Image (tube, rainbow, N blue to C red):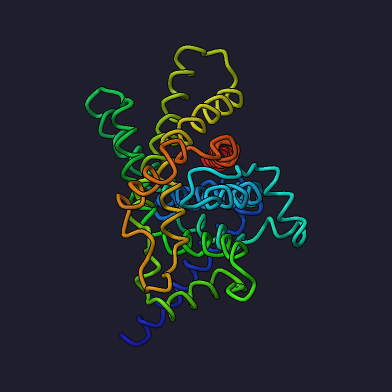
Length: 338
């Protein structure tokens, strides 16, 4: 009897499971919106969405502005160690790159740029939204609203954490973009970001993947403070003081403001990061710069303070559209996955 009872219970369980599957399938067919909504509101998916949306928006933006980033890097590396001499322009560098190869050379390092966004922007936007939502929930329980300081803390923390994770891809991007500046017989001619990372690890050790990590982290904290904090704060202020403004115009305006502050705060650190990540050992076996402070000191001594802001228009044209595209796409993805 016990064997028969067990068999009956198994059959009943199977029938119940099959019935639930049939009901779920019917729900998907007759009400796909509700099915999507149920899936998107599972705890795991809700926790992952800020990271997924951040990565997708960052990769889309990078694909759009990669040529500008290539020119920005070449501008920063031109005239290294020399105070006077020719002053390159963005148009001149673009013309030289195209003249020496082809227009697609402006997309050198795209694979590294996409990998960097898949890691770095996924982390920074995901952490920022997660931290901001946590602070928002805590503030609501206390009957308060989060302000500029809370958003600033979220932006700084998210930027620092994401930069540490994304530094290897960032290093590979700089190496790939600066490779064309070397004599032909000294070029590495990396085939892809993975080839670059593999060869750097073999010749310099795994630790070399985090070369320039300190200025990268500081630069990311400065950039995220300018971008994410001012974007969130600008949207909040515009929503309060311009209630009749459409959501699309509000997002566009806030992203433009965020792009400027992100550029202004982060360019000096981006400049130093580029120099540190590009450097290689000289004939004496020593690196040109021992670290962030040494690089900053030598640039000020040999090239002047203003060298930190060389290429600011190009950097702004690179950062602002990237920030705007990233934030607008991220906002859109939040809307359709809400």
